[in-house]
Amino acid sequence: MNGGIFSGARLRFFAAAIVVINGFFPAVWILLTSFKTSTELYRKPITYLPQEPTLQNYVTAAFEQPLFQVFMKNSVVVAFLSTVVSLLVASFAAYAIARLNLKNRQLILTAIIASSMFPLVTLLVPLFETMRAFG
Amino acid sequence: MLLAPAALLLLLIVVYPIGKLFYNSFFDMRLSGGQGSKFIGLQNYADMMKDTAFWDATLNTVIITVVTVPGALLVGLGLALLANLPFKRQWPVRLALLLPWALPLAFAGLIWAWFFHTEYGFVNDVWSRFGGEPRMWLLSPVSAFAAICIAIIWKASSFMALILLAGLQMIPKSLYEAAEVDGASKWQQFTQITLPMLMPSIVVALIFRTITALQTFDIPYTMTKGGPGNATETLAMYIHKTTIDYLDVGYGSTLAVGMFVLSLILTAVYLRHISKQESA
Image (cartoon, rainbow over all chains, first blue to last red; front, side, top):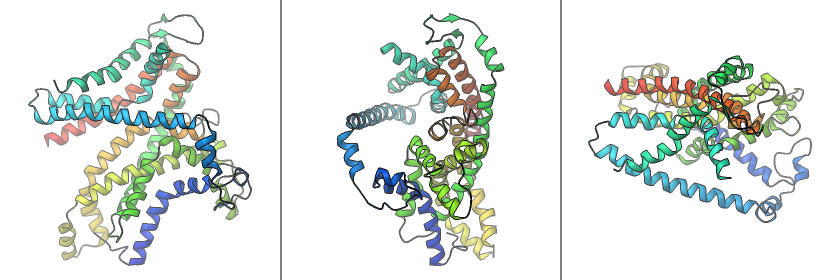
């Protein structure tokens, strides 16, 4: 499509570079940082590329942090369960809304959209209470 | 019948908590004090109206919304236009467009907080290379606000760009060919074809962004914790602080109702727009 301003291959490369740097920069920074030693992390002036690349941080995270594996497991369980439950429930509901001639179809759809816009933080209070009740 | 599971789930995790929220907002419930809850009618609401911290947080939330929604739209539109150019390899650009959106909000906040760090941040490093004095970006109200807005715009422009890119690809090429034949300039093609054809996507992206911007929590929370003082505290953060840190459940609920009303107004605007589109 309208390649006018960026018709040349070099300008196109420039455009791609802007998008790629914007998207990748913070993630790449974190990746580079993860290979730095902790003394290098607090060195001034700051370094861009790791001077003495090390995998020590990964070893520490995986084996020396007793809770890391628990956190990993929790995240996987939460991600798995919420995906399965919402997929099941939503596919039933979507089929019903799409295929069956329901009287209040528009109302149901509106209700679903409205509930998804509800600020989650405001539910924090009641959920917090429920959690406390569970102990 | 098939709707029953979804209805049950909505009832359990949305309707019941909302009801409970309204109910709690009429009580004096301080979990820290040890005394039980006491019905106090509208006292919490009266307190809220006089609470300067509430109004400050509301103002901060509105400022963040007003700055980051158009900001993310402009940056997102730029990214989408760039990403829509005919590249030989699409995937690096597509991946770069997707990545900020895929990162967890709290993670993005932490990265940007590190960038703006006074001693070890990337921003100060570049800044001093160009001859500037290192600044404490996150410790003065104005620059902390600016830093938060930059982080939010970076994160949100990804979502904008994805929606707008999808919209751009729906525009038939024949329109541009016809415009080309008629001798329209690139700028005319942009304003006369691209923008009008993109309008529905822009509106949808704007509305979703506005509603999420009102709920801003993670990025300021991880970058400044609302500081310095309460200068960058949003409404969602104030609710969190009141409820979780101060354990003042009654008043926290009242604040949450206030925020609910704010987003309800916007949701109503959104739903009106949708029904208008459907009847048209």
